[in-house]
Amino acid sequence: MARYREPLCRLCRRDGEKLFLKGQRCLTDKCAIERRKYGPGQHGQRRAKLSDYAIQLKEKQKVRRSYGLMEGQFRKYFAEANRRRGVTGELLLQYLELRLDNVVHKMGLAANRNQARQLIGHGHFLVNGVKVNIPSFRVKAGDKIGVVESSKAVGCIQESLSRVSHAGVPRWLEIDVNQMQGKVLHAPARDDIQIDVKEQLIVEFYSR
View 1 (tube, rainbow, N blue to C red):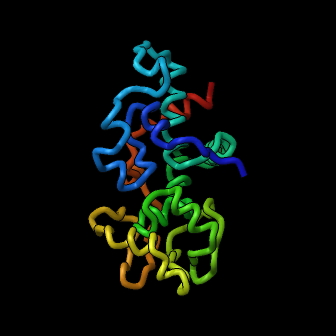
View 2: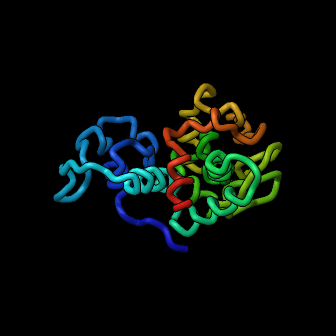
């Protein structure tokens, strides 16, 4: 499966804001945005007025990069959200939030989504007692996510859990640090999704 293999900090600099792709590093002075607050490349400091299309594209790219998806994957999520009854933009964000790699990260079982994706692929997590190694697996209300018993000693999982703050875990999730497991309480509403994005611009982009 295709995936982005280039420097992650370059993506944050391109969007001009933190996408928190590298976990704790993004909260330190080593963050690329803190050191160089302009785009990458020789034309990165050029200021240009953005067209409506460019604004819509930038918003779409920001969300796609935040969740670590390729264009084809992201387009499929939008197509599904567009078919369903409801607000398309909100449904799109809800589907992205319910991905297993995102839930594992939000529960504090992984430092960032990239690490969560790798750990899931290596078979370190259970959903309702069944091992799942598909990062895009969509969880639902009532699902229980836990660490495989033999994986509870994995260093990066323990390190990530040591930094968990219950105040930082979204209210639609719960986490038991001692048991290394959590639960999806309900599907996230728009107010529960803490990402600074104008999803209507994404809908307009794909509706051109």
